Length: 594
Picture (spheres, rainbow, N blue to C red):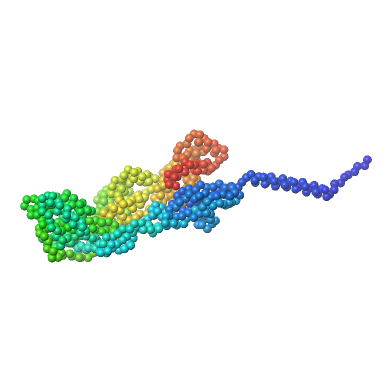
């Protein structure tokens, strides 16, 4: 039988080749597609508070590409600002989103990261007029809205420097300016007003006192009241029975040829000054003259009362009352004129020198030297410096710093110098803890300068308390400084250095977002060359994490678990993130106001 070779049809062969190629291609595509369908692309959305003095916290969102989400309701607040939405750019030029808006696919990059920045609009109507706005403490100022004259009341207002709102309105009593000549020819001006009602009340109480002691009542010398008031003006300049020009007190008017004079200063009411005079033997003798055998009783009296007004930049900051009593053996002649000289302008320095002297005593524990007393006093009188500047000058001097005082002693000195008292237990403990954490005495100056105690103390010396703005980042926010100082102790195992503390505090002061604070606590310290040079093994590394982020020593099971995760291939940064995002560390941050 003859062998036959069968030849395959060429068309059929081509069809078979195409069939097999198509199926192989399909298998490949299907396999690839199946792999993609089981591996979703994920990304995270972070929320940035976008500014300083923002309160609250927003947790990040974990999202998948292809799915729709809703933004959480904004939990952030900012003094004097209204939240208007989110934006992909801090300056608002990117894509905007309303609060609780829906979104999808903010990025398609695998493991991508998108930051949404809070957008804020100034809302003056919600200004708290205190606390911090945009990282700066809200201040106020006093502004005269109507000038006072000798016959018309004036007015000034306390206004918020941020929103301009008037927070308080006070009246300025009508007043006159009186000029007093001194023995060396210089002249001083005294501003104030005479109080006839108080003069009459002193007169009433005096006669009651004399009657209670069996003495005659006195008649009131109305024509001499103004002469008594002039002595009240003069006694503010020079508290003595000798007048500022060197002559005796009774030369103001020819009707005071003989008799008696009582003076007082600083008493706020007629009752107060009467008690003061009664407690002084010489003054009490004048009021009861005629009680002792051989004494001829007085017949007439006039009383002076001056409300001395002390001004700083045109604002009446304080008031001191001066008082006089003038006794005569006869009733006054109502037709007799009182001679009142009116010289030129001058200045009083005694109160200022007293303020400076007490700082020498408190800060330097010595009496002032003549040149130093003159220089400090002149700088206050000229307006070159205010009271808080002088306090800083003493406590910042080499002489004070060379004393090597403890933080507790420094706090006590500040209380004595600025508040005029010993520290209370709570205040003392708080300020010492702040100095221990790295803040300087500048923070105390700034804390005390606006207090009523310091202002009243300065008013009593007739000087301007002033204002104080801290210059170092570590003095700007107590919570931030304590937090950074803690990082040095817990992570690096040492006390802060001044430059480093200021640097990290400045970083957080400029961006108080949780994201930035976490960066400082993790990358800033744990990735520092100083920490890397410790060459800690995994066990010691985890122990530091416990101290830094949980504020406690490790527990054995927890330590073993974290170390085993490191041994299994987890990076140190991944393990550190587990600690950093724990509720315990969030609580620690909250304790520092972060």
